Length: 374
Image 1 (cartoon, one colour):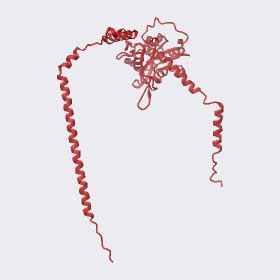
Image 2: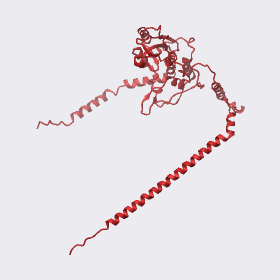
Image 3: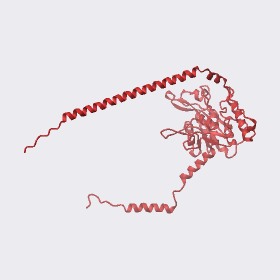
Image 4: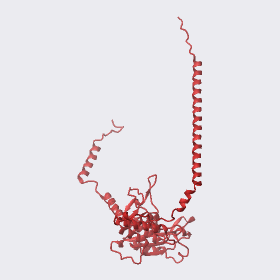
């Protein structure tokens, strides 16, 4: 028997499939249009509400009258006598509040290192990369001693003890030489002792022509460098002063580079390289902070005020004050790191065991024959 041909209705199936797909596309387009219309309506409603709020705040006269009645300066809150008799803690709190009232009013013409806070026992610290608390507490004597290093008086400072004689603070100011004044050349050196007294303050003649005096930052002018000392004499004097001493400063790497001097790293205390004073970037890099920010955060004092050139003696005292405040933690961290680097990895017995294990592993390894040998 002959097999009959079975014809499948392919054209009709395809047309039906296309019709279904077109209907689905049209439904999707309709849904998108509806969603867009709803979102536009909601946005217009929000705009109207915000405009109404703004108009209400500007037209309401009570708000302006209440703001005008507010006092311009802060005042200590009035507290009833029944609460005030709670002891010495309340008296301390009242005295602090009265101090804040005086600090807010302010007096024009104060020095650049005026106090920016009145809390005597707490020194606000930065968020550090090592997870140190944001509020580092110090006793009143330590904090006042560190602040006195910046504020003075320096003429009435007590004589130095044997331990404090080995500390010096150093700061330098530079001028620009070379093409466009991009290279830095030494222009002024200041060395300060533990109590903040200036031991050396000399201007230095540059061997090259000065292109940029950087007066706005350094305070150096051509008149100051006219009768300045030679670089060789100042370099020799500074080298003899810092020999065998521990030097403190901010960015000492640049200062020593300008002086063309080297110093043992174990006798350098650089506040720009001290990790708890640094901040961590998004990429994980550790970056130094500005000296004026550190002095403000830890000592509540202001230095390097805007519109005033830097004073190297003030900068050296600021770095020294920061070191004095954190000296215990700083030296403890250095000792800890030194012990970690010099500590033995294990006793002789464990070292022998490790060597024997290495020998066994090398002896038990399979020896492959060369290709030319059979």
